[in-house]
Image (tube, rainbow, N blue to C red; front, side, top):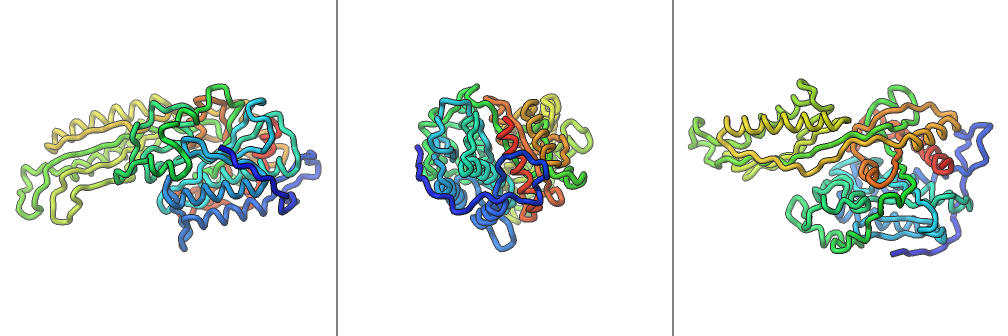
Length: 435
């Protein structure tokens, strides 16, 4: 559905003069003050006094942010709608949808628990700023520009990360028929509250070839650009990821009366597995990084031997071979540790995301835009996953990074200098125009 209301822009486009080179081409410039103000206001949605943001996908704060995005778009004279997968899609009105090739700009608004204010949100608001600038200045483009806020990229509440981009890219067979959150609550009702419809996901699928390209701008979430003193990163690849849901089942018992010999303690085995996961990357170097970041212990009582332990193993590497080798080695170790501890261990793959190379033409367009603005840039890989690697199923993708202060992300301390945020979106705008 679409909701189109034309309004008179409430402020003119004011270039950030400090960023304008003397020989800059006669093209529009984004409104940096407006961009930064929006980032500040969206940080208040789900924000706390310590600077953290908790806006988990399909939760109340996430719905509030998505509603705020629609309101901002309509106020800017744009059209905003929500597809069956829960993705917010923003367009310019009367641009001949379906008659021209489409260029998609996107990211996500949801966060992890107590996360940062920029991850994902910056990319969505950057896309909105680019689209609003083009609309206000009456700039014609050869492509129809669409901005997407993908649903539930993080999977912090409902363990189906990349939900929105997977729906749009047509990976419906990889999604569960009855998705539920970590407490067992069904997604169907939560999705309906956002305007989506679990029974009509097929209507939200975009066919391969329906996009001329996809662009995503993001904070780096790493230290490379800051250490090099370069404001722009040109992403050449996005890491692959395998996530396994592991369950260790033993025998509960009294902590005081059950002899040590003969115990079937799943928490002990789980602890050994956690250390093994770290060794996959640190000692054996089978993959780039390996992490266990969440455990659920049942019954989780201080004077009771646990009955079961569930946790997720996250493996990441830039090559399919590295991911496969790490998983194979881990599964062999799980069997050995299960036998040693007298417990049962199961491991189910819940996420398999292949490494993705970005499109050479889009990389060249980003590089050219940075050079036009006299900005130093670095070509580098992304160690984090992004919606871009899912959209790569149906379109060429490109990514722009801006520096992260201290290289940190997913935490309240996540920060990027305001001038870098603005500069990055100017590069995004010129990349769009260059295409």
